Image (cartoon, rainbow, N blue to C red; front, side, top):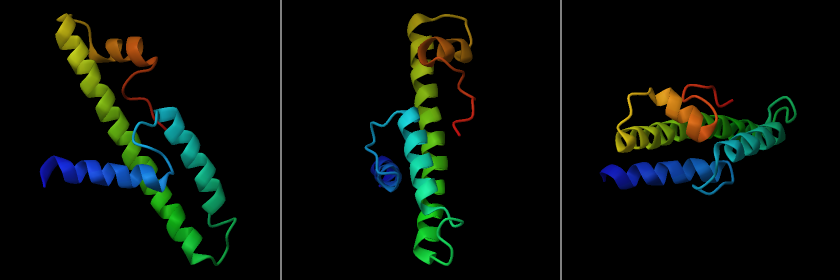
Length: 106
């Protein structure tokens, strides 16, 4: 199974947030906030289905933010190797993405 099962899992999480796998970090954040508000247990008291959906949305958001960070680090590392520069990965991340690799995605 290897690589394909990972891709399927990530696609599953994107679907939980009603996104495609090409979604940007900003789109992930926006979808998470919108859906978390819709299914929040405080706004849906005694609704088990909404509570389960809320948990799924939180899990998907957490995993996709980590996955997005890993994708960025791989891209930065490839760029650093390509240019054979002695600068740090965070320098490249800031230059490419406008933020460091370790900023919170929440």
